[in-house]
Image 1 (tube, rainbow, N blue to C red):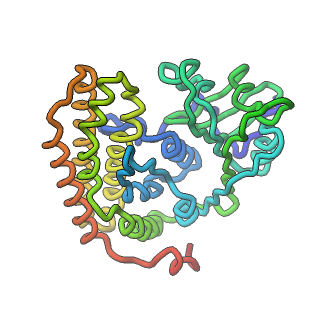
Image 2: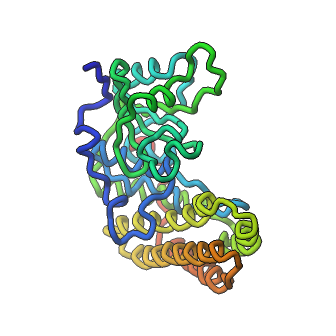
Length: 337
C-alpha cells in the first residue's frame, strides 16, 4: 500500500457528514461544491464549520445569477489559521498532489464531474461540468484518490482516476486545472468564545459589503423573462436553479445558522437569524413555483413572492445591522489572530 495522506483519519467510507448536510430540517441540504467541500473538510479536521459561512451575508444578485458564495481564504486564516494559496500546476498532477500531501497539506482541485462516481444520477458519465474536490490522500500505484465532494468523502479509482488526474502527460493539450494548497502549519481550534468573537468581527465586515440595492427586487425584474425563455426553449432548469435560487436560498440558510451560533453570546441576533431562515424557506417556495412554471410551459404569478422575499431581505439585513456590533477589524486583531 503506497497511500500518501496529509493527516491520519478514518477511511472515506467511515466519514459521517456534518449535520449541515445531514439535518432533516434544512431547506437547502447542499449549496455549491466549494462551500460544501469546505464544510466537510473543516468538520474532518475537527473544526466547527459554521464560522466559515460569514461570506453568505454578502450574497448578491449578479444579473443572470446569484453570488456563488464560498469560504474566503482570509476568513479561513483569521478563524482557524488555515492558509490557502494557488498551486502552480507545471508538472504531472499526481506528482504534485503526492508531494503536497506528503508535506501535510490538503489540496482543492477543479475537475470534471463527468468522471466523479459520487455524482451518479446528475453528472457522472452524462454531462461535463466543472466542480471542485478537496483531496486528502492519494495512492498512485493503486490509482486511488481520496477526496471530499458535496456532502461526502469518496474514493476515485481506475479509469475515473486516470481521466481526472492525467493532466500533464505527453500529448495532453488541455489547460491545467485550478489547484489550491491548504497549508495547515498554523492550524488551531480557538476556544469557542474566542472563535465567536472572531466570527462576529468578520460577519460585520461581510455585512458592510452587502448589496447597496435590494437584490431580490433586481432578481424579480429578470424572473418572468428568464422562466418564459426556459419554458419555451426547454432550457436546463437545473442549471438555472443552481446559479440562482439555490445560491440565494442556501446563503440565507447559512446566514441563519451562523447567527444562531453567534447568538449564544449575542442574543440580539436571534431575531435576524429567524428572518434569514424565513428568507431561505421563501426562496425554496419560489423554486417549487418556478419548477411548476417550467414544467407546464407557462409563467405563474411570482411577483407577490418576490415582493415578500425583498421585504424579508430588507428587514433581515436592517435588523442584523442594528444588532451586530461594530468590532475590531481583522487588521486590529492581527496580533491576536
